Length: 491
Image (cartoon, rainbow, N blue to C red; front, side):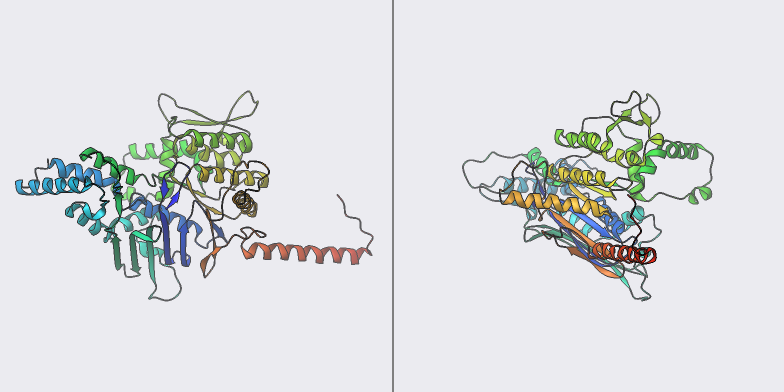
């Protein structure tokens, strides 16, 4: 697990796919900052959306899947109020719960996953070996009729799609999920939960406080907060922010109109990723949910990049209004009158102000979109600050400027390790915190290692620069030859 600045821990997440969308093969370790880079249509967004679908399906990447449901299950088991249970079944459930509390309070003994009630463990394990919930979420996130549409087309009718999730703590596998799906809609699922997962260590030192049922509930709630929520800012966020009120009003008018089921089935749907983002924007509330550190990051982004403030007003009826107020200006501008840079970054500011918490995961597609190169480098600083605040960040990008700045931030971290900094750096990263993955057409995804000289740079970026330079030299030579070397370059 990776410790954050706030003492919490991210579990180590390994995701592998084969024949998934455009991706031939990929094996990805999620780092505090994970970067997907490469040509368009090579699968960067596909993999980012897959991570979102996995997260939603298992309610996070916690110590064990659906850990947030454990407290609800045990509360029901302890009280045994359901009339659907026979008296003896209620007694058995209560006996199991009492035995579990006894194990929880055994001095010096760690409390493990295997100490949970048999029925609860069986429920979790059996659900992990079913594919229905995950397949439904994939269909929702990608707006598909069947997940067979995600199988990579190669001309081989026998192709199969494979998706694998492995949640680890150091060398120990906590739990895993594997799905294999073929073009005939056949699915094979494997799931594993390690019975030796330690939910509460036994210190064995000094007297221990006796824990009751409510303490056990809190134990599960803490386990479920190892990663709290995953938020996704899609590439279409700027257009959605500008047109959100029109979209929402149109949807309401459509629902309130008299329509038949046949007409309803013909209405195109949003992908789940877009729909969830739109819902958060339309239902946005002004509240101080984010931590002080993350609020400071939002303010720095407004001051240093937007050079203005994103203001939110909540009318008594209707949808929230977002406006951009430039620095030292007398009036604010609607999103439709603001620059594309403002529309692109406004959702990030809004999420930092009222939604994102330390230990959350944030996915941003192309954070550099519509930004000047200098602004792109400043956004890289924002990403690093989020990592320092305990937020796991995943981005897709085409920006050489962004990668260059991330490389500099890693170099800053390497200098810090050597304790050679002349001044305290504003922000920094370490090479262990950053994972960059190179997506190419018809080739497996591979990791781009950090190099002190090259930083984080796909080979193709150097090839493009070299071709441009060589072409520039060739054209200048032709001009000089045609003019007899007398042509003077104009400034």
